[in-house]
Length: 438
Ligand SMILES: NC(=O)c1ccc[n+]([C@@H]2O[C@H](COP(=O)([O-])OP(=O)(O)OC[C@H]3O[C@@H](n4cnc5c(N)ncnc54)[C@H](O)[C@@H]3O)[C@@H](O)[C@H]2O)c1
Image (tube, rainbow, N blue to C red; front, side):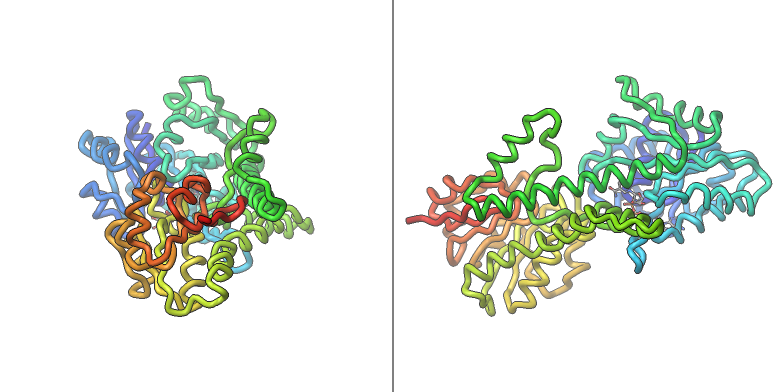
């Protein structure tokens, strides 16, 4: 099939590349010429495991190309996918300006009938708005299919190539049939393609992210209570997770959720509810808990150092909002670092992939360490903020030698308290009692 994907960020680039990998002819479009030029050289602007190899192979085999020319991309395609960003607007609602602009350009460019697919995460009713814009700007038939994306950054290729389910929403059986054909190679293990109306498809995406965010805030609240009552949230998490009605996913306590999706999608649901005079109390609480959770680790740091960290030096391991990505959008690390800097601390950081992104955020306000051990040099404490695998089994003896005082604040519970005490560390984690050597 001939496809164009407009918006070459995480979602557009992964989707376009994976569709090319299935044998389709794909052209990816973006408004940023430098991004397109880099992609033409197979230089990937984001870190996503496995993506570079796929982009290279499919480009070399002429199934995948990149352009800034939306018109020519639309003319040569039967399916036109919108995958541009939908950031949080000032009111909390999703900003649809890029989606609507692309829809208009697609209509103006159309030289025949097309299927327009909305892959961006958009509020309920957006497909209807897009449909109106298309009708106003072309005489050709352009059916609108809502096809929300559920991939996770860091495992995006795997998620895209083996989706748990594919959701497609639309009015035209013919258009939905085209999407089923497109996705057929990805659902050979009988994972379902769920057809529904546009509004239900749009709502499904928000409901999924809102529920996942809710689980995270829930377990963070449980963790905070565990700390007070002397329970271990790790045990509690296992205890509830083995209940098949509950499961283990998204029940890891930590420093709060971040990233480009959960915070803005939770806000967007609250805002949509408000439009219909519904106060989504639960999601407002989910947000409040998350905001508080992002500040909790620094609270522990301040308490440990008697309320004053002026001139103290801290090492931070992990900057990305989660492992296996360089994405720092809404990352808890940003809040943690800003608060420590505001309190007068000096900070040395290390992240396996997000150092360049961090430089864009913090400039010369931090020391950027080449290795995680370099960051520890003369630090008064280490804060673990992102649970990269390479931080899980460190050389504790070396860590203790490098740190000015052996104190670890683990925002992701990647170490065992007993092991930390054994190595002589004072150790704080989330939802478990602090421990210190005798
Ligand atoms: N990142 C994720 O993990 C994820 C997962 C599921 C869904 N989503 C949703 O998918 C959408 C895209 O997310 P993303 O993370 O890929 O965003 P992104 O910010 O990484 O990429 C968006 C891209 O669109 C381009 N763009 C903006 N306006 C354009 C225009 N008028 N024409 C052409 N290109 C344009 C930008 O230059 C950028 O490259 C969002 O709605 C997001 O909520 C994201």
